[in-house]
Length: 174
View 1 (cartoon, rainbow, N blue to C red):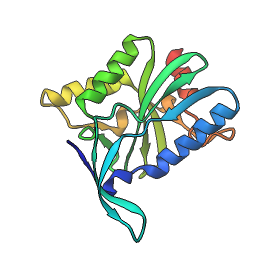
View 2 (view 1 turned 120 degrees about the vertical axis):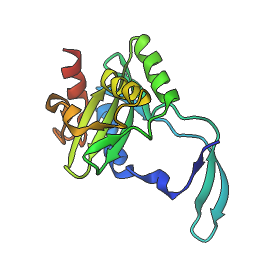
View 3 (view 1 turned 180 degrees about the horizontal axis):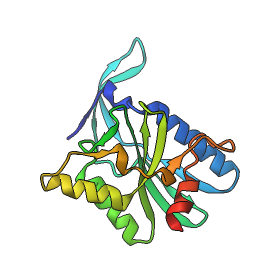
């Protein structure tokens, strides 16, 4: 059983921008995307602050977000790094399996990755993630280098969308 502590909130600023974008997409009728909460069972509470300080995960998580954009099912996970590369240690086999099954059912699975050290964010197609993940399992590098993130998939704050990833999906589909 996995455990949660305060490190579980890393990347929450990036996720908040994604949540804001998803709300604008919903309001404009472009997409309906929801954040999937990971069920936890609290173990320790700080009653003076009203916060959970230790908990365990009830089940393995799949992805952070799921929904549909103009009739196309999408699912994705949000990752943030300050290392100039994306370490693969926080991506688990069950997540890859879910994303693979999602794609087999005609959905689009991907990562949204924020390089906080460069102030840049990217759409990373599932196929690229899977390639690097499988190479790592077979003794290859344990991260995805910055150079693997294509400029055509860079996402920007644009037209009132803090992380306008639907544009990158359109590029991917072309």
